[in-house]
Length: 331
Image (cartoon, rainbow, N blue to C red):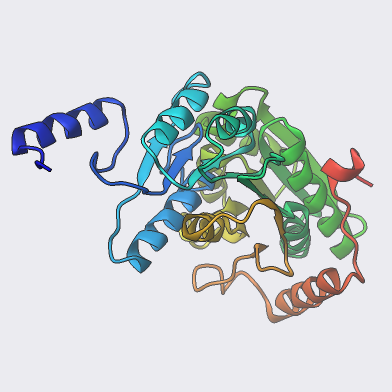
């Protein structure tokens, strides 16, 4: 069998790059990750997925993987199908918006394995990975209420969808658990995917909340959150990050981050898909309130003790946090 010439190899690589996939063209059976709107360096949800892919790469001696960043909705199905046609395996889709595309393409390529974050696809070759965001949000809601000096805390969501209402609902429950008289103000950034990447709008919403007396705000808004954190820094208020540990973005005014271990989910999926649904909560270390050197001075021993106790009670079932998506309400 003859091997490709160097010029032929260059041509193949050029074709791969023109398709938008940042990975070697000749590699076989590489895993692939498809990020959603906002880009892989959104400092939040997509970036957590990227970190998981990089962790897998490091653990496997620098083995390459395929990746693609969605720029518009029409690319989702196309990107999945191109990855499948190239033999990528497994293929991990980031975000609920890729659900229908995963379902369609996974049916077309039954011998390949797929995984999707934040959505359930009931197919024998798909692993659906969801998180109990309401549990982690409960903990940061407690921290917000305990840290607030005004008795008013805020929430800025990204796209107004049930998943983000799930964050909000858990946050409100935690805040009220810590302080029954707390006032919670909530705003959503928008109703389209662009709501995930609008820092200017995030800053506007945060400033409006600060003007009403809010002094701690939780942003569950992807890249939009960066604007919220900057506004909090500028106003001398506190902010709470989401998905990735964002405490380092504005050290001194980041109270904590509701960490959602999308990175671990991607690393594990790259190592082997387990068809079916996996739900990751506090018990599975899938979500939590981030503690590190960046926020150590903001979290008192009393706050930490109360959060640790609540965490244990949620895991044991003593505290039952309402899941907005299951109950279709927050109560």
